Structures are given as structure tokens and as C-alpha cells.
Length: 223
Ligand code: URA
Image (tube, rainbow, N blue to C red; front, side, top):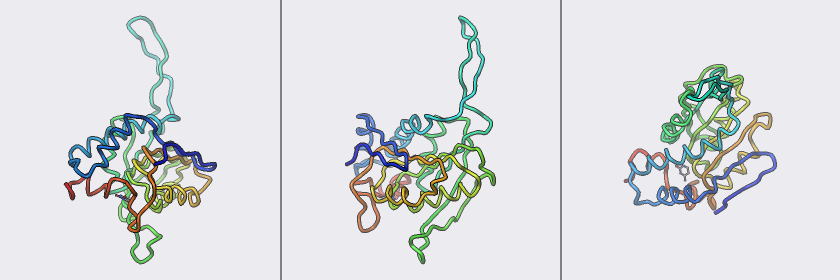
């Protein structure tokens, strides 16, 4: 499994930390219950959020400590960052992300593969502001597998004016990273944060060794 990756045109951060490896191992284990799986996803997302928000906008905030006045920093409210879970599995990452970014707005995007044109995505749900100009956008989706959904979701945000998009995923496949790198509009300031990059996709486009179907495991379809 890859622990770090440097690509020339796309910024990708792979968390490389023993705590993350420990949590990922429990997450991947097929015997882990849905309740524990959900808790671990939240914890991993909180750790990823540190990396994902390294350049988040802050403003000066004058306060008084018990000792003296000082000027601290607060997350900027104008405009607020926006978190966009990709339905359904992205919802499982929302709690961890909003705990770290409590002032963020939350939008929703439902995308699925177009069975007649398997390389294309159909947007079946959208609850987003029409204008995302100047907004720092955080797309959350646990599995960067083929990369098709991530590219489509990023371009969907870009059509609404977003120029700054960070994708936060739990696992990625090298094929998906390559697809995103080749297909993402280079005018978008785009980066990806993942806990690990696995070996490959299998013939059903599942990540190997992966963790199985993230949505099913989050919502108890397999327990
Ligand atoms: N989606 C999943 O839930 N798991 C994979 O391995 C790939 C895509």
C-alpha cells in the first residue's frame, strides 16, 4: 500500500500516521460492526480535516484573556466554507467534518452511475447554493474508486462558480487518482486528502484491499 504520493499537477495528501493506520485496520475488518465503523469514520474524518483545512480562511478576532487583550483568529464567516457530502456514503463523514468546522454550511449532492453510459454520472439530488463563487468547498465521499463521481461532483460545483475544492476521502485507488488527475479542470484549485492509497480496483470497481461497500457498512446492510 502506498503511504505517500506526489503528483505534479494535483495536490494529494495521504495521512501517514500510526493512529490513522490503527483506525483504518479496524475499519477495514469485515467483523467490525456498523456502529464502530461509523464512529471510526467520524474519527478519521476529524483527523483528515486538520490537513484539509490547512488554508482555510480566518479573520482577526480581538479578545481579552484573563491576563491581557490579544488578537486571536476565528474561522471567517464571509463567506462560510461549505461541506458537500456525496450521497449516500458521504453522509457518514458529515458528523466528523461538522464537528471540526461548526460554522460551515452543508449542501448535498446525490450522484450515481448512468447505467446506459457507465462512464457518466447522473445527478439525482442537489441542495446547494446557486452561487459558490469565493466559497471554500469540501466534498466528502469515503471511496475514491474510479474517480468518475469525484470529477463530476467537482465540475458540478465549478459550474456554480467554485474555484477552491478539497475532496476528503477515506481510501483511494491509484486508478481513481490517475483519472482525477487527468480529467479535473486544471483551472480549479483542487486537492485531495485521503487516509491511504490502496493497491488497485478489482473487476467490480471495488478498492482492494479496501473496506467493502462503504454505504452498506455505514448503514448496516452487512453487519
Ligand atoms: N465504493 C465503495 O463503497 N467501495 C469500494 O471499494 C469502491 C467504491
